[in-house]
Amino acid sequence: MPPSPEATAPQARSVSLGQPLVWLRRGWADLLACPVPGLLHGLAAAAFGWAVLLLAHEDFWIMAGAFSGFLIVAPIVATGLYAVSRGLAQGRRMGMVDVLAVWRSQDPRLMHFGLLLGLAGTGWVMTSAAMVTSFADLPVHRPLDFLRHVVLDDKGWVFEAWLMLGGVLAAPVFASSVVAMPLLLDRPVSVLTAVLTSWRAVLASPAPLALWAALLWAITGLGMLTGLLGLVVVVPWLAHASWHAYRDLVD
Image (cartoon, rainbow, N blue to C red):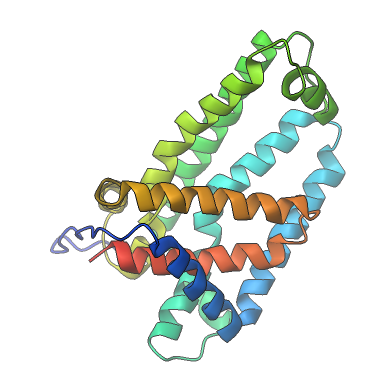
């Protein structure tokens, strides 16, 4: 649905610090209520990760770029699952037909926002590659090189700086996207309005959304540490939970 000129800008609401745990509980309930679309999304995410590991396990930067890009564009990938949560809240039976209908709509706003997130991911990989290759004591080509020469280098500071740089670059991406994709799916607003609303939501509830960001990264990290198998459940769980975050954060 194209943006309507008459659409008013949505207002952000503040939430309590414990609300992210409620979002996780509601997201889990949605996954149990309609498991097939979510588990298929999760299986596709895990298969993507396995393919990256198989094809790029000897090239750290290709592997890092692929995984970083996936994490950044995850809100786009989960769009169909937002529709599932919306339908469940309305008492409708949902399935893959409803998920595919979202993508068949070919909404240009979703494509434009996905492009913006993709550019952000590319910028992060190029920036981090420039920093590591410039300041690491030895060349970094393989994942093992990164572990030895950056992570385990007790005399250097590159790993700490790399983590700080990642946090600085990830924060505005998170603030721009935390409710933007569900909002674009749910209402006829422009991409700019969705991004600004997302920022207003962060400013209205900074501590709860900092906790939410930490939970998203921690749970995703745990899913990856299981040989990516945990992503089969983690991806749909967090997608459904993100819909409930949007519903609480946007009036």
